[in-house]
Image 1 (cartoon, one colour):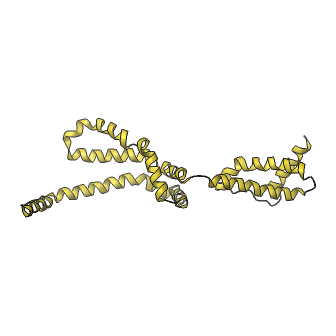
Image 2 (spheres, one colour):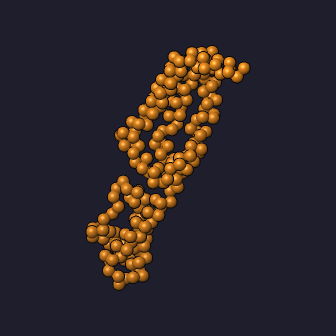
Image 3 (tube, rainbow, N blue to C red):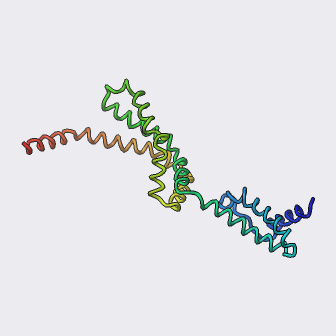
Length: 206
């Protein structure tokens, strides 16, 4: 083993053992530094050991730990709001939610217009072309990126990754459908009142 490799190995040993805590697993720092932070550390250790042979090893290790953290944070901070919004929406499983919501709304409409039932598959094909996640993805991402800050998007991701957040995601289409059914039933039960209001409006305008 060459002196360079021995020096780099000693530097990495100090990084691990001499009271220099590595990033916490699962944190943003760990996610990026685990791949490239240690690589940066290794490369700079080799360079500095050759240029600064008189510098104490412990000091070098501390210097390069700071360098690795800096690079890790830089990469993490470069994520755009659009990328974070996409992560959030993927967590929502928007493709499944849109499909389920579309089918539920269509079935509700078909109950009110039975003559359209034979054309259900054709209508779904049309909706898939213009209302699917594939069709709407970029527009929805742009909306979320505009309406929420980077910090707010990250806060939502943190919540929706919890068991409660996952349950909320699963329940949203069902709750929306139930709400729509309640509204449709109330309209149906009171349609006579609407007809009367329209008739009075017509008479008043004559």
